[in-house]
Image (spheres, rainbow, N blue to C red):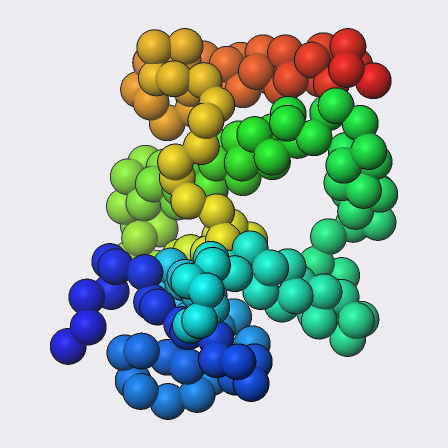
Length: 190
């Protein structure tokens, strides 16, 4: 059985076909999106050159979903991303997005944790497990290509989920402060 902690290696052949090295069969972009939704890390490399093509294919998956009418990213976010490539803000935007998704993921986890620990009856309620599983699936879908290794503030700086603050209110204040600092940096660059 394959190690699900290791990235799933997909090789792209000269014919542009994508080959799953674990199952020894060809896969589509939709198959790769499914692996990611299931929580697998995926790495796509060119067989001949060895170049890592993962980012290119993840962007292609998002573009295909957008072309089918599925609004993956709001128009204003897409517009700001395009703008960030033409300004010096390009170096801040990826960190900001990674930090935002990390905060979203941490917040969702805390909500589910609090629901089950603060109210044991809730955890025994029919459908709670299904709701928790849906919440987890949603978070995986929202954060699919992002890893937890972002280059934002360190735990010593009070990063969300680092245990640096003692209560939910402190965490919220830390998040607000960090977002304000990022906004100030973006405004300075603009």
